[in-house]
Every structure is written in C-alpha cells, then in structure tokens.
Length: 254
Image 1: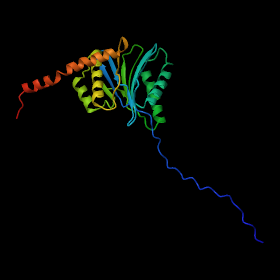
Image 2 (image 1 turned 90 degrees about the horizontal axis):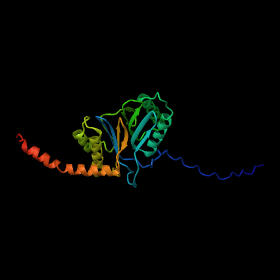
Image 3 (image 1 turned 30 degrees about the vertical axis):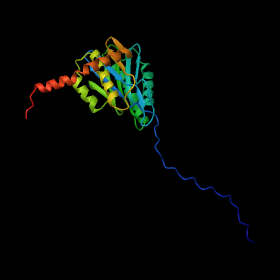
Image 4 (image 1 turned 60 degrees about the vertical axis):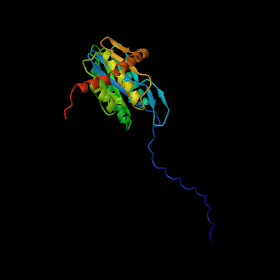
C-alpha cells in the first residue's frame, strides 16, 4: 500500500548574500588650513573654521580646543573628521586632569601618545591630523604634530590640511623666520590663512589665532584679525612694484 505523499510547506527562496560594502563615512571633514609657528618668544597656532564635504553644504565650526589647569595647559588644532578630533580631545583632557603637581611636558606627551596610539588601533584609518602646543610646570611651551600615524616634535613652521600646498609653503619659506616675535608671527599666520581662503577651495570662515608665550595664553579678537588683514593687504600692494624695480635694476645676462 502506497503512503500518501508528505506535504511540505513551500520554502522561501534564500536571500541573496549581500557583498560587503565598506561603510561610507558621511561625516563632513574639516578641509582646513591650520598653521603653527615657533617664534622667538613663544608659539602661534591659527586655523580657519570652514567644515565641508565634496558636494555637500558648508558651515563654520571652531577647530582649536584649549584648556588650562593648575599644573598644565594645552592647545590643540585639527584637520580631519571633527568627531575624531573631539573624541581625542575628550580622552586626552580626561586623563591629563588627573595629573598632579609632578607633571611635566614629557608626561603630557605620554598621555597624548597613549590616547592617539589607542585610537589608531581602534580605527583602521585615522582621518585626523593635529598640532598641539603644551606646557607643564615651569617648562617652556612645546609644539607637537600628529600626522595620523605618529606623534613627534613639530618643525619650526607647520601646516595641516589643504594648507600644506605649494602656494602656502612658498609664502612661508619666503616670509618666515624663527627670529620673528609672536606679534609678527601672528600676522604671518593670519596672512597665510587669508591667502588660502582666497585661492584654495574648502578654506573659509572666521580665523582663530592663538598666541602662547611665557606670560600665558591669548586669543586675538575678530576685529584685531580683520584690522591686521587690511594692513597686510595694503602692504601687499607694494610687492609687485618692489619686485619689478628690483629686477629692472639688475641687468639680465644673455
């Protein structure tokens, strides 16, 4: 005797396996210009404020963080993803606030190194560059640079983001001297950022300029920065005539 066929429920077709797609980071980046100089009497750090993404809207946001505690002070400027910069700053300051009166520049640098190394292990790509000025105890201010991979002592003049261009480097090589004081250094930083905002896309917005000397921390006001820009633009008008006169006074060899 034949058994009746067993009725099986219709099986749904298997869902196709989706290929792995790397997450697309939609967060806007700070395609910025950050400058940092060593001067005869201190340090200068300056940055624009524009945040933008290719084909997306633009807005302004401060890219310089600073904090002063009883035993130490630190100023950080960034280029890259704002969320990574804010995460790094929160982790760094949380640990640094626990340091006591024995803190020195080396211990602060160790905090920075530990935090940034840990974030480097956490994220496959660290879309973040930093310029960091710090001082602890009675030591002189130190300027450090994080290039996305390692933390090291910064050069006498430094750029992050689109500021690291041939135009800005040419101007800085021509105009910068480590013998200049912080007032002249601030003028140079403002001038370079203004030139970047004028000639390089993804730079713009208000300019933040920080002066760090042995007497402490000072940020230039918006009106002060604007007056310095006007003064430098007036002086800039004299450059073509000076260059032409200099070249005409020197005979060109055939």
